[in-house]
Length: 209
Ligand code: HEC
Image (cartoon, rainbow, N blue to C red; front, side, top):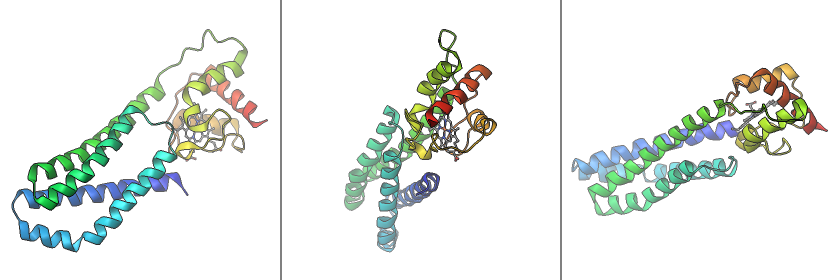
């Protein structure tokens, strides 16, 4: 299955789920009980399908992601906490609970965005390899261990976050440099200085043997 397709699908399901619950909470809070009951009845099946797809795509992404940060675990905990709160809140018509459930989901969404921004910044952070001995391959290995291993794995074939298998890549050095410097799909840009970039390229060649 294509990882990026699942990412897009997950976003679509999350957005649909969130809008649906914002609307339901609005109806509950503004005392439109009959409208809420009719809307809930009409959307019961759709809600089940969307929440199931939302959770299944989420599980798949967790399974196929590099080890999750504390931020991401917090996000997941917030989503799971919101489920019983929403169920009880709407069943009993308790407004504060419905609002808390929606806020938890909105907060989880915000955390995911924060996490992305943080990773982007970290990917751009320079690594000091001036003390690394052993030539370009050693420099490349040092960079690879810090910046690339989470998705590509020690041997280049881990494939997390939809990462390509570097053991069997058919790209030329220049094509690889272009992807490393500018990013592609689920891989962010790594603006490495020339010596480190050439070192990584030299190190990737050793993974192929
Ligand atoms: C967040 C996960 C992630 C990290 C970290 C990461 N990559 Fe990637 N890498 C990917 C993904 C995803 C692709 C596939 C991009 C595409 O084609 O859509 C990829 C593709 C590549 C390719 C192209 C391979 C091919 O045959 O198309 C190279 C080369 C590569 N990565 C090298 C690196 C190097 C070197 C680093 C560290 C500086 C690195 N990657 C860090 C996820 C990552």
